[in-house]
Image 1: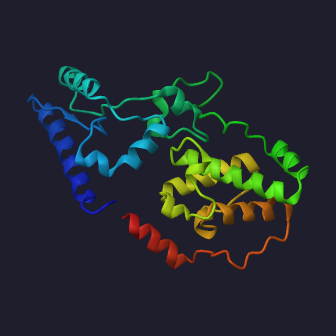
Image 2 (image 1 turned 135 degrees about the vertical axis):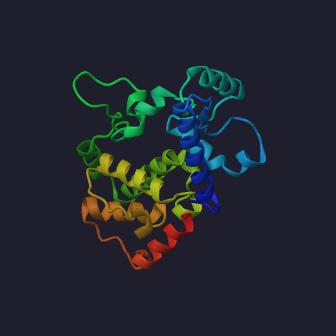
Image 3 (image 1 turned 120 degrees about the vertical axis):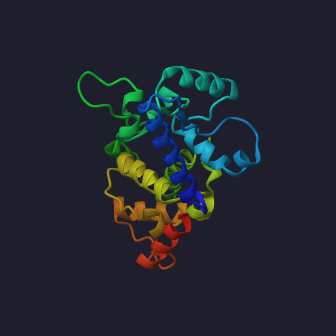
Length: 243
């Protein structure tokens, strides 16, 4: 958490508990845990990247009019604690991998089993490898780089791979430990590889990661002298920076 966020979160939990206690005693109280509102303020300017990421994952910021309607609905509900939020169900369902348990009830379950998010678009590892095998060395390198940049951009909520330059560090581009895992999961799915959770820390740019995929998929002798593998201490430093 950012500085001060732990105290802020603790205060919110206290207010939720206070609302529950007052309702149990027959007294009025409603705690509403709002997320971001779609309105320009000093706070929203500081979290524009977070807002873009949330929208890309199916949880856009609330329009003020909708937020106020949810306030009225919450006060009429008689419930002590609610979470008013906007949900873009198609976008939420289109995310790769298993749907987070907290969001599972927000989309319709398939009759055949538990709710899952759809596979990454065109996720066919065998077809990918076959296509890459038919390319020359330079074209294969370029295709893998485009693959990495495209998925990295999607994770960060950008519209195209040009937002993630090949040589720019992932951390400088806005990745954190959670988005790092999301990128790893996407690449696992599209390539069929079992990539490490520390993937972007071991190969900290799109170019370095593409070279690693080339070695992993084809065993090609791509120079690794300049690649920097993160040590455990470096990873702790990165995570401490998010705390």
